[in-house]
Image (cartoon, rainbow, N blue to C red; front, side):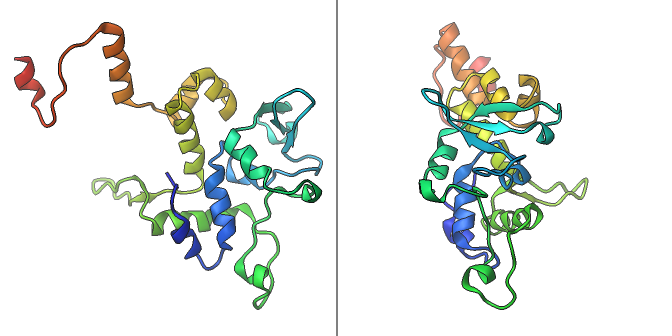
Length: 220
């Protein structure tokens, strides 16, 4: 959804460009406030863990869970790729440390580590400047156009996993949902064309697909 928006990200003057590119590349299932709570070694935060002869996971502390239970979830390959860009000697403190351009280049008043609310506003600005529309306007209800936001990275992550053929229950686990129904309803509604293709493969459909044809005229 946000792929290829580096020029737009760079144009957001209030945010260091590499921060924007990093968040766009992560495309993870974590909410923004959770993503900014990922650390290498800070107690009570989300931390990447890798034990000997086992695949890497993200450890979610109980206090950050709705069910108040500590949970380990699979670490997605593209998330792992971003994390491993940090040299081993520098893997301490926060995994992601967004800074404003003012802080980076010491312009004027320096601002500390940005809060999720401000990062979210900047990500929304990127989506709007890039004209990435996730919901059209509705004149009847007065609802304006909805442009892509940071939370849409979470939605597009579920859609990306579904498109890659990841089993539904695995996607639900990755998204930390109790059931696939929740994931499907809010994050991965599916692709009707893909479903139609599966039906044709299973049932041996032989009706040719023509561009611009009238379904009614073909079937009557």
